[in-house]
Length: 318
Picture (cartoon, rainbow, N blue to C red):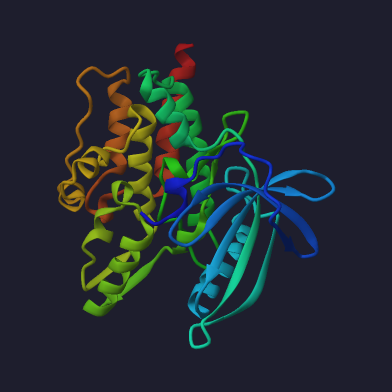
Protein backbone atom coordinates (compact mmCIF):
# COMPACT_ATOMS: atom_id res chain seq x y z
CA UNK A 1 0.00 0.00 0.00
CA UNK A 2 2.99 2.32 0.33
CA UNK A 3 3.67 2.01 -3.37
CA UNK A 4 3.77 5.30 -5.17
CA UNK A 5 1.28 4.24 -7.80
CA UNK A 6 -1.65 4.00 -5.36
CA UNK A 7 -1.76 7.74 -4.71
CA UNK A 8 -0.67 9.20 -8.04
CA UNK A 9 -3.13 11.45 -9.82
CA UNK A 10 -1.51 13.03 -12.84
CA UNK A 11 -2.76 16.55 -13.49
CA UNK A 12 -1.59 19.95 -14.58
CA UNK A 13 -1.18 22.23 -11.61
CA UNK A 14 0.24 25.54 -10.49
CA UNK A 15 3.28 26.54 -12.51
CA UNK A 16 4.54 28.99 -9.93
CA UNK A 17 7.13 26.92 -8.05
CA UNK A 18 10.74 28.03 -8.34
CA UNK A 19 12.30 24.85 -6.94
CA UNK A 20 14.63 23.14 -9.38
CA UNK A 21 16.84 20.05 -9.62
CA UNK A 22 19.82 19.13 -11.76
CA UNK A 23 20.02 15.72 -13.43
CA UNK A 24 23.30 15.15 -15.30
CA UNK A 25 23.75 18.86 -16.04
CA UNK A 26 20.13 19.34 -17.18
CA UNK A 27 18.00 21.67 -15.09
CA UNK A 28 14.35 20.97 -14.34
CA UNK A 29 11.87 23.22 -12.54
CA UNK A 30 9.50 21.36 -10.20
CA UNK A 31 6.09 22.78 -10.98
CA UNK A 32 3.65 20.64 -9.04
CA UNK A 33 3.48 17.51 -6.92
CA UNK A 34 1.81 14.72 -8.88
CA UNK A 35 1.89 11.97 -6.29
CA UNK A 36 3.47 10.72 -3.11
CA UNK A 37 4.18 7.25 -1.75
CA UNK A 38 5.97 5.71 1.19
CA UNK A 39 9.32 5.79 -0.58
CA UNK A 40 9.20 8.62 -3.11
CA UNK A 41 7.50 11.71 -4.48
CA UNK A 42 6.73 12.50 -8.12
CA UNK A 43 6.66 16.04 -9.48
CA UNK A 44 5.63 17.63 -12.72
CA UNK A 45 8.90 18.95 -14.10
CA UNK A 46 9.71 21.43 -16.83
CA UNK A 47 13.06 21.18 -18.56
CA UNK A 48 14.83 24.55 -18.58
CA UNK A 49 15.17 25.95 -22.08
CA UNK A 50 13.05 23.45 -24.02
CA UNK A 51 10.15 23.76 -21.53
CA UNK A 52 9.43 20.06 -22.15
CA UNK A 53 7.17 18.60 -19.46
CA UNK A 54 8.39 15.47 -17.68
CA UNK A 55 7.70 13.59 -14.47
CA UNK A 56 10.48 13.73 -11.88
CA UNK A 57 10.57 10.92 -9.32
CA UNK A 58 12.53 11.88 -6.22
CA UNK A 59 13.62 9.05 -3.91
CA UNK A 60 15.25 10.00 -0.60
CA UNK A 61 17.58 7.26 0.68
CA UNK A 62 18.39 6.93 4.38
CA UNK A 63 20.84 4.04 4.09
CA UNK A 64 22.82 1.98 1.61
CA UNK A 65 19.98 -0.53 1.17
CA UNK A 66 17.60 2.29 0.21
CA UNK A 67 20.19 3.59 -2.23
CA UNK A 68 20.71 0.19 -3.84
CA UNK A 69 16.95 -0.29 -4.22
CA UNK A 70 16.51 3.12 -5.84
CA UNK A 71 19.43 2.63 -8.24
CA UNK A 72 18.13 -0.84 -9.08
CA UNK A 73 14.83 0.76 -10.10
CA UNK A 74 16.68 2.93 -12.62
CA UNK A 75 18.50 -0.18 -13.90
CA UNK A 76 15.22 -2.04 -14.37
CA UNK A 77 13.99 0.77 -16.61
CA UNK A 78 17.05 0.18 -18.81
CA UNK A 79 16.62 -3.61 -18.86
CA UNK A 80 12.85 -3.68 -19.43
CA UNK A 81 12.43 -2.02 -22.80
CA UNK A 82 8.93 -2.23 -24.31
CA UNK A 83 6.36 0.19 -25.70
CA UNK A 84 4.02 -0.67 -22.80
CA UNK A 85 6.60 -0.16 -20.04
CA UNK A 86 7.46 3.33 -18.79
CA UNK A 87 10.85 4.55 -20.04
CA UNK A 88 13.38 6.36 -17.88
CA UNK A 89 14.79 9.36 -19.75
CA UNK A 90 17.59 10.08 -17.27
CA UNK A 91 18.65 9.45 -13.67
CA UNK A 92 21.15 10.65 -11.08
CA UNK A 93 22.41 10.04 -7.56
CA UNK A 94 23.52 12.85 -5.26
CA UNK A 95 24.66 12.85 -1.64
CA UNK A 96 25.70 9.99 0.60
CA UNK A 97 23.30 7.94 2.70
CA UNK A 98 24.70 7.28 6.16
CA UNK A 99 22.35 6.64 9.11
CA UNK A 100 25.24 7.12 11.57
CA UNK A 101 25.88 10.64 10.28
CA UNK A 102 22.14 11.18 9.78
CA UNK A 103 22.80 12.04 6.12
CA UNK A 104 20.70 11.06 3.11
CA UNK A 105 21.22 10.66 -0.60
CA UNK A 106 18.75 11.37 -3.38
CA UNK A 107 18.01 9.44 -6.55
CA UNK A 108 16.16 11.32 -9.29
CA UNK A 109 14.42 9.62 -12.20
CA UNK A 110 13.29 11.67 -15.19
CA UNK A 111 10.24 9.99 -16.73
CA UNK A 112 7.82 10.79 -19.56
CA UNK A 113 4.76 12.77 -18.48
CA UNK A 114 1.31 11.38 -19.34
CA UNK A 115 -1.31 14.08 -18.72
CA UNK A 116 -4.22 11.62 -19.01
CA UNK A 117 -3.07 9.98 -15.79
CA UNK A 118 -3.66 6.42 -14.67
CA UNK A 119 -6.15 3.68 -15.44
CA UNK A 120 -7.34 4.09 -11.83
CA UNK A 121 -8.30 7.69 -12.56
CA UNK A 122 -10.12 6.68 -15.76
CA UNK A 123 -12.05 3.89 -13.99
CA UNK A 124 -13.02 6.17 -11.10
CA UNK A 125 -14.41 8.67 -13.61
CA UNK A 126 -16.35 5.92 -15.39
CA UNK A 127 -17.61 4.38 -12.14
CA UNK A 128 -19.38 7.64 -11.24
CA UNK A 129 -21.71 7.20 -14.24
CA UNK A 130 -21.45 3.39 -14.55
CA UNK A 131 -19.91 3.90 -17.98
CA UNK A 132 -18.38 0.51 -18.75
CA UNK A 133 -15.53 0.09 -21.19
CA UNK A 134 -16.34 -1.94 -24.31
CA UNK A 135 -15.21 -5.58 -24.00
CA UNK A 136 -13.01 -5.35 -27.10
CA UNK A 137 -11.33 -2.20 -25.74
CA UNK A 138 -10.72 -3.92 -22.41
CA UNK A 139 -9.22 -6.99 -24.06
CA UNK A 140 -7.05 -4.93 -26.42
CA UNK A 141 -5.64 -2.86 -23.54
CA UNK A 142 -5.22 -5.92 -21.36
CA UNK A 143 -3.32 -7.76 -24.10
CA UNK A 144 -0.84 -4.87 -24.29
CA UNK A 145 -0.37 -5.00 -20.51
CA UNK A 146 0.27 -8.75 -20.75
CA UNK A 147 2.81 -8.21 -23.53
CA UNK A 148 4.61 -5.75 -21.26
CA UNK A 149 4.57 -8.20 -18.35
CA UNK A 150 5.99 -10.91 -20.61
CA UNK A 151 9.12 -8.74 -20.91
CA UNK A 152 9.50 -8.85 -17.10
CA UNK A 153 9.03 -12.62 -17.03
CA UNK A 154 11.52 -13.17 -19.87
CA UNK A 155 14.21 -10.88 -18.41
CA UNK A 156 17.81 -12.11 -18.46
CA UNK A 157 19.79 -13.41 -16.64
CA UNK A 158 16.74 -14.27 -14.53
CA UNK A 159 12.99 -13.59 -14.71
CA UNK A 160 11.60 -10.54 -12.92
CA UNK A 161 8.16 -9.91 -11.40
CA UNK A 162 6.52 -6.51 -11.11
CA UNK A 163 4.88 -7.50 -7.78
CA UNK A 164 2.57 -4.46 -7.62
CA UNK A 165 0.39 -4.56 -10.73
CA UNK A 166 -2.81 -2.56 -10.26
CA UNK A 167 -4.89 0.09 -12.00
CA UNK A 168 -2.94 2.88 -10.26
CA UNK A 169 0.28 1.61 -11.82
CA UNK A 170 -0.99 1.71 -15.40
CA UNK A 171 -0.66 5.05 -17.19
CA UNK A 172 -2.78 5.88 -20.23
CA UNK A 173 -1.22 7.39 -23.34
CA UNK A 174 -3.31 9.65 -25.57
CA UNK A 175 -3.99 6.73 -27.92
CA UNK A 176 -5.34 4.71 -24.95
CA UNK A 177 -2.26 2.50 -24.92
CA UNK A 178 -1.48 1.31 -21.36
CA UNK A 179 1.97 1.99 -19.89
CA UNK A 180 3.17 -0.09 -16.92
CA UNK A 181 4.86 2.14 -14.34
CA UNK A 182 6.39 2.15 -10.85
CA UNK A 183 9.26 -0.34 -10.99
CA UNK A 184 10.11 0.22 -7.33
CA UNK A 185 8.49 -3.08 -6.36
CA UNK A 186 10.20 -5.17 -9.09
CA UNK A 187 12.06 -8.21 -7.77
CA UNK A 188 13.55 -11.52 -8.84
CA UNK A 189 10.54 -13.56 -9.86
CA UNK A 190 11.70 -16.95 -8.61
CA UNK A 191 12.53 -17.20 -4.93
CA UNK A 192 13.26 -20.44 -3.10
CA UNK A 193 12.23 -20.19 0.56
CA UNK A 194 14.11 -22.50 2.94
CA UNK A 195 13.07 -21.68 6.46
CA UNK A 196 10.68 -19.59 8.53
CA UNK A 197 12.94 -16.52 8.72
CA UNK A 198 13.18 -16.29 4.92
CA UNK A 199 9.44 -16.77 4.66
CA UNK A 200 8.76 -13.99 7.16
CA UNK A 201 11.17 -11.66 5.38
CA UNK A 202 9.41 -12.10 2.04
CA UNK A 203 6.00 -11.77 3.68
CA UNK A 204 7.04 -8.50 5.33
CA UNK A 205 8.45 -7.19 2.04
CA UNK A 206 5.20 -8.07 0.25
CA UNK A 207 3.20 -6.29 2.96
CA UNK A 208 5.35 -3.20 2.40
CA UNK A 209 5.40 -3.13 -1.40
CA UNK A 210 2.45 -5.14 -2.78
CA UNK A 211 -1.00 -3.54 -2.57
CA UNK A 212 -3.49 -5.66 -0.64
CA UNK A 213 -6.40 -5.91 -3.15
CA UNK A 214 -3.99 -7.18 -5.83
CA UNK A 215 -1.59 -9.29 -3.73
CA UNK A 216 -1.30 -12.99 -4.59
CA UNK A 217 -2.36 -15.56 -1.92
CA UNK A 218 1.14 -17.05 -1.62
CA UNK A 219 2.49 -13.63 -0.55
CA UNK A 220 -0.02 -13.30 2.31
CA UNK A 221 1.09 -16.41 4.13
CA UNK A 222 4.51 -17.43 2.82
CA UNK A 223 5.25 -21.07 3.60
CA UNK A 224 8.59 -21.96 5.22
CA UNK A 225 9.59 -24.25 2.37
CA UNK A 226 8.28 -23.24 -1.02
CA UNK A 227 9.12 -21.61 -4.34
CA UNK A 228 7.55 -18.29 -5.30
CA UNK A 229 7.62 -17.46 -9.01
CA UNK A 230 6.40 -14.96 -11.61
CA UNK A 231 2.83 -16.20 -11.31
CA UNK A 232 2.32 -13.73 -8.46
CA UNK A 233 1.88 -11.25 -11.34
CA UNK A 234 -0.73 -13.49 -13.01
CA UNK A 235 -2.95 -13.24 -9.93
CA UNK A 236 -2.57 -9.45 -10.01
CA UNK A 237 -3.44 -9.46 -13.72
CA UNK A 238 -6.67 -11.33 -12.90
CA UNK A 239 -7.57 -8.66 -10.35
CA UNK A 240 -6.63 -5.98 -12.88
CA UNK A 241 -8.87 -7.42 -15.62
CA UNK A 242 -11.75 -7.64 -13.12
CA UNK A 243 -11.18 -3.96 -12.25
CA UNK A 244 -11.16 -2.99 -15.93
CA UNK A 245 -14.61 -4.56 -16.20
CA UNK A 246 -16.14 -3.50 -12.88
CA UNK A 247 -14.02 -0.46 -11.86
CA UNK A 248 -12.39 -2.09 -8.80
CA UNK A 249 -10.46 -5.21 -7.84
CA UNK A 250 -12.65 -8.11 -6.58
CA UNK A 251 -11.10 -7.52 -3.15
CA UNK A 252 -11.40 -3.73 -2.96
CA UNK A 253 -14.81 -3.89 -1.26
CA UNK A 254 -13.37 -6.19 1.43
CA UNK A 255 -10.54 -3.74 2.02
CA UNK A 256 -12.88 -0.74 2.15
CA UNK A 257 -15.13 -2.48 4.71
CA UNK A 258 -12.10 -3.13 6.89
CA UNK A 259 -12.58 -6.90 6.69
CA UNK A 260 -9.69 -9.34 6.27
CA UNK A 261 -8.38 -9.11 2.71
CA UNK A 262 -6.04 -12.01 3.48
CA UNK A 263 -8.94 -14.36 4.29
CA UNK A 264 -10.89 -13.22 1.24
CA UNK A 265 -7.90 -13.73 -1.07
CA UNK A 266 -6.92 -17.11 0.37
CA UNK A 267 -10.55 -18.33 0.09
CA UNK A 268 -10.40 -17.53 -3.62
CA UNK A 269 -14.10 -16.66 -3.79
CA UNK A 270 -14.73 -14.31 -6.71
CA UNK A 271 -18.16 -12.73 -7.05
CA UNK A 272 -19.37 -11.11 -10.27
CA UNK A 273 -22.22 -8.57 -10.38
CA UNK A 274 -25.58 -10.20 -11.18
CA UNK A 275 -26.36 -7.75 -13.96
CA UNK A 276 -23.16 -7.76 -15.99
CA UNK A 277 -22.59 -6.35 -19.48
CA UNK A 278 -19.73 -8.81 -19.99
CA UNK A 279 -19.97 -12.34 -21.37
CA UNK A 280 -19.14 -15.51 -19.48
CA UNK A 281 -15.96 -15.89 -21.53
CA UNK A 282 -14.42 -12.82 -19.88
CA UNK A 283 -15.42 -14.11 -16.43
CA UNK A 284 -13.76 -17.43 -17.29
CA UNK A 285 -10.61 -15.58 -18.35
CA UNK A 286 -10.51 -13.76 -15.00
CA UNK A 287 -11.01 -17.01 -13.08
CA UNK A 288 -8.30 -18.66 -15.22
CA UNK A 289 -5.80 -16.26 -13.61
CA UNK A 290 -7.29 -16.16 -10.09
CA UNK A 291 -6.38 -19.66 -8.98
CA UNK A 292 -5.34 -19.73 -5.34
CA UNK A 293 -2.76 -22.49 -5.83
CA UNK A 294 0.08 -20.83 -7.76
CA UNK A 295 1.10 -24.17 -9.26
CA UNK A 296 -2.30 -24.33 -10.99
CA UNK A 297 -2.06 -20.74 -12.23
CA UNK A 298 -1.05 -20.18 -15.86
CA UNK A 299 2.11 -18.51 -17.09
CA UNK A 300 1.87 -15.29 -19.09
CA UNK A 301 2.10 -17.15 -22.44
CA UNK A 302 -1.16 -19.02 -21.79
CA UNK A 303 -2.87 -15.81 -20.70
CA UNK A 304 -1.78 -14.02 -23.88
CA UNK A 305 -3.01 -16.95 -25.98
CA UNK A 306 -6.46 -16.88 -24.34
CA UNK A 307 -6.80 -13.09 -24.61
CA UNK A 308 -5.79 -13.24 -28.27
CA UNK A 309 -8.44 -15.93 -28.89
CA UNK A 310 -11.11 -13.79 -27.20
CA UNK A 311 -10.18 -10.77 -29.33
CA UNK A 312 -10.40 -12.93 -32.47
CA UNK A 313 -13.96 -13.99 -31.48
CA UNK A 314 -15.03 -10.35 -31.13
CA UNK A 315 -13.42 -9.39 -34.43
CA UNK A 316 -15.15 -12.28 -36.17
CA UNK A 317 -18.53 -10.99 -34.97
CA UNK A 318 -17.82 -7.44 -36.15
